[in-house]
Image (cartoon, one colour):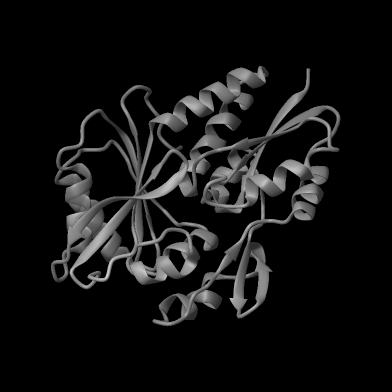
Length: 287
């Protein structure tokens, strides 16, 4: 019986604890640290790009792994006694899936999955699949079915601090001439980032209004876990957001996650996101 191995892209936002626990290897994406100079994510630190994220006119761009990168990665992480399941960033957001597919053509036992997700949502899918494999499940169809069923229940909302920065990264487009008075939030819909709602700007209330809008009338929430990801916020600011969440929903666990450098670059400093599940299927606590 072949062993199932799960891998993913570095944009999945899983930290080393969970990567090690579930034996999930990641293929590096690239970050433009200087104009025209791309380096692998594992070769750069947050402090090296922080200046770019803080600048009003500076944009740190990212790029998916190349076909060659994926080919070398798959050759390194799979053998004839294994089946490798690789979960890619949504094909509607990144070129990752389109680069990974041709890279795997001549490598037996490699299956490429378009996750239709990003960030920690992608990470959850990889963890769910890896957990199934570690628990002895060898039926690939069943593993993928569980991962895809979980994906249908993942709810992701994103609050960019600078909409102009998001526009400049070409991930989403906001054609509003009156952005001084409104602020959009985004969610993942059918694998793509779409504007979810428009908030009126109130001085110093952006995070509070984001949380209120997300949870005030929310229904069918699985209250076992919510994941908060923040870019460049202090511990006190993160705790303030957690306290705001508790005003509307009592979650068993509020997990504060540090996003990958790739996701930090695409979101801009002081941005945040929320990820949770609906009630159809309970998500186990991160442990």
